Image (tube, rainbow, N blue to C red):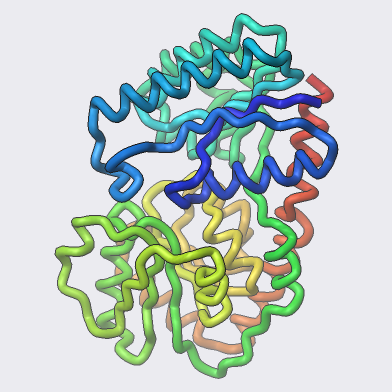
Length: 346
């Protein structure tokens, strides 16, 4: 099978870029040919995603259009798999790409790596143009599937994110033996919309616990006065992120909105109990057994969750559930085999 994947590659390092690399590797190992049109940000946005430069965005869009046309001119594809953007300017660009690829005889898979109702509802006309031209639609969670059917009468396929065999191996051996909570970990963009300001407020009530925040630091968080037990690790290599998971006792993710967070999935694979908001795919992932849910921007709720999870026995039960859930549902072979089956059935 020959596949054209339209998706970002690193740099910058991020969940979707990691997804792209793992997808390409697995599909190639299974005798598929994968060509990639790289849609990653360029210029200043590599270091600061929020810094949008109009000229750089036009250059980026032009490169994507040209590379898409070049690939389509050189090869015939069985499937074009398009990981679309989840913001307005990106959707405008994506609509132009769709007008290009819709003239082929390829199966077109529209893949939404976001919680659709939160991210795309304002741009429904742009989104519907692409839905109408797609052979199949992949979503990350049940909420997005229900929304598509309710608003557009479109049937979609839930395709969760996944982890590779490295994490699968670690999942078999990760253990929680510490009698007390020493380290609480967060991995992701360090910004208010991810609930990082809430983490800082909570940390003041637990001075003996280290709160390690790993990822790109946004200006609004940089300005906040922080207690000494908040440790801003910054952006690190994948190897160092693995070490962070291995050292942590709890993973915290109080985000305001989400699709299917890779960081939560990785934390689960290391057997970490999770404290998170009930958004996106997180309820599907944890099922009330792998962690404790908290309300958005609710400091007292997070404090109660940390106190409730202090028991070693409770943490071990959550740890065991999370590891088994990852092994049964979120390993790369299970998810990408499902994608391949979907390619063939449409």
